Image: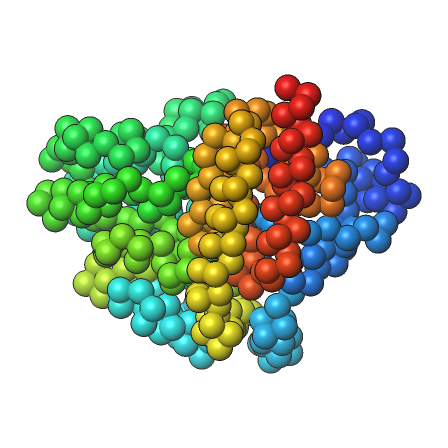
Length: 413
């Protein structure tokens, strides 16, 4: 998970309610302070709305850091989890369970076929992909090319794969074998490939990097290089997968099929879960004893994952994403045309980036003041990851509040 670029000062608000203050005091005493937290204690959610301990209601355009793909507490997922918890909560992967097999089948049929390795997070999924790249040649071709602006996780392997120096501070030395290229630069990739290169790892759409889709021809060029040089092409779809873009997976917009794909965040509609998908032939290299995840594919996560896929199908949500995205694009582009503080608007399904010429963190706070929850990444990009089933009314309200917040901050700049 990436960090919020900035959050309010701990002493910024003198009007915190008693219930919230009690929770904050407990955190101050017992919880490691590795997150910047807003002074709000959320207690309940439904759809695109959440409520805090004091009873205030918020419109959430960044639900669950992109994990709540179907909004807060979607009824089919809640029901599936409740039923599963009453039957079987957890067993190790030395046994078979029906939900895990069904989950793998549904993912396989909607992607490029093949098989799934299940884990609990995106960083674990990327670690599995890194291992698979190396195991294919028994470590002889251990180098992996990644890209500036990408983000692949927080474990030492995946953070080493992340070509952003700010995530490396104080953690060196990084895991060896990762080489960084400018995003979109095929010539740079060609120059980096040598006899020790085993794979290429890339997000089809940069998420934490600012909601930036791959340039025209870039993914196609990476596929060509991988084929010519016998490399594995790995797509990190932790943020853009599972229907968020209006296609089941982000790479399907580009007509390029990877050898390996990693998923998490929205995979289980809010329950912790991750997966690595690969071909049947490549899956054989991740042999028994070489990798595992204790909670990977557990019955509860699997039940949630199956329910999420079926809900997307049953309610026609891929088509709804296209319609909601068009409305976001229309309203935010119209606002850009009359506000000099907006540099660019990027909308790819329910991945939305509003690039600003002003401080994004201040806009996040101005949105919070309006009971709107959004995110800032890369300092000046307001990032929205709305629920797939967001209503038209919520899109309009969210765009209006965001516009007002930007205008307020711009007037002070």
